[in-house]
Length: 216
Image (cartoon, rainbow, N blue to C red):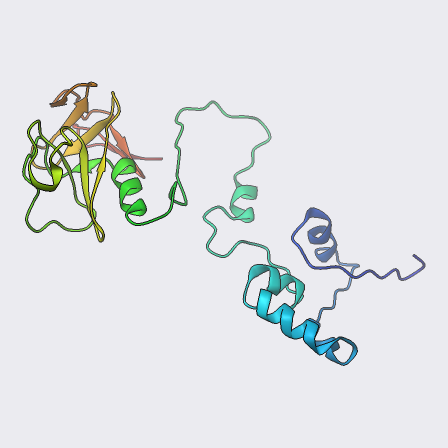
């Protein structure tokens, strides 16, 4: 209160703090918790640094840093701000992104990639390849052998931790590199060539047989 009101707070990127920092008539000053070590219990500073040092919370609480964005964020506040519109536009395409992977543990990234980037080396393969590369995927045939035994018509993706098998869902469509066509799972079997590539889309580009390409 008064002619020159003052306040102290942990600098978090909430609307009020961001608005105050951006005002021309507001002055800001900051400091580290360690700057007050002469007036704080030494054990507290040591414990706080051990618990939160190097973390986002520690940068805010201990270092007094105003962090505008989450480190590594795909969608920044500025990006969202510049994409805002006053009138809702007609939706012509819905794109769903998954990040981070929907799970944890060995092979999770590769399984998610295989489902989101549905491209396989070949369809109806019964024998596991001898020298697969991490990330490569195959559609298992009707009479699989070896490590694929008992997994007919599954998606088999090779990861750094070995084979990961995924059951397909009815209606799933993949691109077969060996055949140069799409294959669709009808619920009981895979049917190569059952879908035209006209208008087929994958992340970042939409390509058609007429060689046109459209960004989205």
